[in-house]
Every structure is written in C-alpha cells, then in structure tokens.
Picture 1 (cartoon, rainbow, N blue to C red):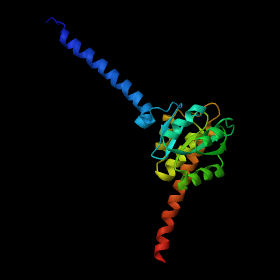
Picture 2: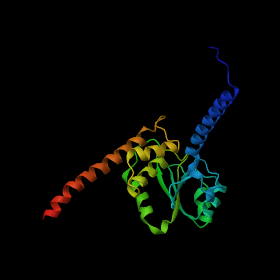
Picture 3: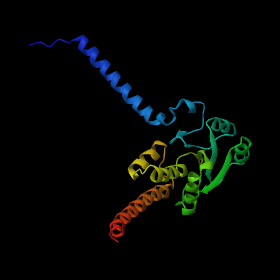
Length: 207
C-alpha cells in the first residue's frame, strides 16, 4: 500500500509546533515579568524591580532620577542594604519627602542578627509605610531580606522563598554562598522553634 502525504495534516502539525514554542516562550517571559505586571509600576525603570505585596517593593540600585518614580508609587521609606551607599541617594530620597535608612550588609558575608532585626523593626513600624528595599543588583542582600519577610509574614517554606530568590536572579557563585546558607539556617531555626512550641503547648495546657 502506498503512503501519500497529506498537506493539511502537515500544516496542522507545523502550526502545533509553532503554537507550542510560542507558549513556552510566553511562560518563560511571564515568570520574569509577573513581578512588574502591575500598571502602576509601568513607569519604573529600575533594574530587577518587583513588588512583593502592597507594602514591599524591591530592586537594584536606583539612579538619582528613579526616586521620583518610587515617590509616585507611594513609597515612604527607602531601605538601602549596601555597605557602600552611593553619595547621592540620601539627599535625593529626603528631598522628595521620603525617609532613607541604611542597613549596611555585605553581599558575601553571613548576615548579622542585628541587621535582620533592624529590618523587621522597620516592617513592624506603621510609620514606615510602603517601602523600597535595594542593594546593588537587587539579588543577594535584597534576596535574603525578602526571604526573611516571607518567612515571618507569609509563613513560606524554604523551597518557596528560594524559588522567589532565583526569580530575582539570585545565585551562589562568586562568593555568595553564605547568603543562601543564612536563608537555609533561618528556615531550620523556624522549624525548630515550631517543634519546641508544639511540645511545650500540651504541657502548658495540662497545668
């Protein structure tokens, strides 16, 4: 029996391949752009910019002209995590009526508890309002702070926070391994604290 080629079938197959590749491409793009899909942030041109929730915005080092765009978003506090802050930032932020806070962190050293405590204190202070957190590239120090935020206020687990960190281009090479180690240790601490609390609760109720 001879086999004849069906041109219609070939056309359908070709269209299916094109559609599949298109959907894969869209999926890859959406994973990166869903952070900035909000129309209110469309005019922000800061690298690696994203919005965690209604209060928490994050990204890389803003240029001097970028702060007006943050102000337009309703940002009240700019939290700079750099241990080498740029000279123009404090004056540029304060000139627009926003508050500038520097929590100096290294991008290659294990974070200190006082640095994390300083951030959490700001979050818990209603006067902080909406805030923008940044380091140099918005990847490592900002990634750690974002993870701590998710752990404490959203009760995420390590897999969830680390996926989000990688969505913002986090990597451990070039000396950044201690940043991931801290996020892992923080998760272990939360788990241990939860277990201890569950063990202590029945004993307390029995008294």
